[in-house]
Image (cartoon, rainbow, N blue to C red; front, side, top):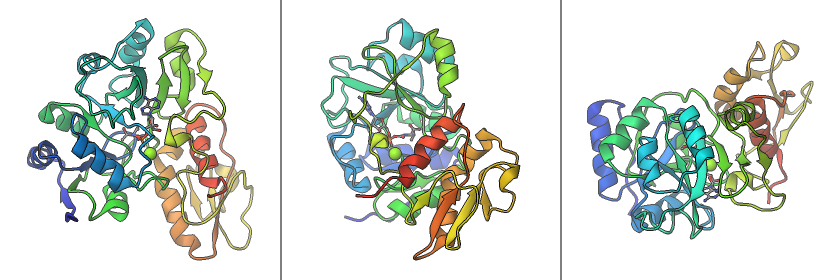
Length: 318
Ligand code: TXA
Ligand code: MG
């Protein structure tokens, strides 16, 4: 059955309605500080199966489980000293930890795709926090977009991609961080699985040691698939000027002539917050047969997450 997707206000009433829908096995998209998540009860096979179906997401890709606080997270996974340190430093916030799954966690096996580990995140957004507390259980929530497409940072992006396939979206406005959480694997040596909203430099400082990079060729996250975050138009990177059929996305004062900009002053936090919306805008402006070109972005701080998403947006499509 195709539900009509309701748009809920980020008020106590709207959040109560969302929690109700979730308790009945419904799917509700909600704002987090990174991107909008597509939430469903992480203990329900039915709800989790519906998340995969709504996104058209391959079942071998596990989902992130969202919790209101670290205490709730400890009930689902085994924390060691490194996990304690990162949780204390960055939760609530844009960090996901992959940890050994606890026996009897109660999570649907679909959430972890049968792996012995689970990805956990405690989001900081007040609407996400209120929803998690009221719902009172773990919420599985991948980004609320069709698999492989650009992630949503506004409620309208969610309905564009998933309207008619989910029960509701809570409209909490634009997401402040704009790129997904950083994923760190701690089921072995500390490893960066996906760059994101917490810069690697900050994680390494808190850990007191460098992070390993993920093993080449080993895909544990769909964000690691080469082609992902893809707009409709082809994307060219490190562009210092636009070609005739291209919409140029600038960064910093050097690209003042660009049609769109991630940040006129070269601010990486602003660029991350604007990234996905700007890619959508560029796609619209490019139109059929058009293309997108993006100015160079420095590979430091949030620039790592931005370049990671841009490289995938530009990767050859299957
Ligand atoms: O910022 C975010 O993380 C957003 C918001 C909604 O919280 N969520 C998000 O979820 O980006 P998603 O499903 O689009 O990306 C989650 C990533 C996937 O690439 C998945 O493969 C990976 O986390 N993941 C989940 N469980 C894992 C596990 N046990 N081991 C390794 N990677 C895992
Ligand atoms: Mg995603």
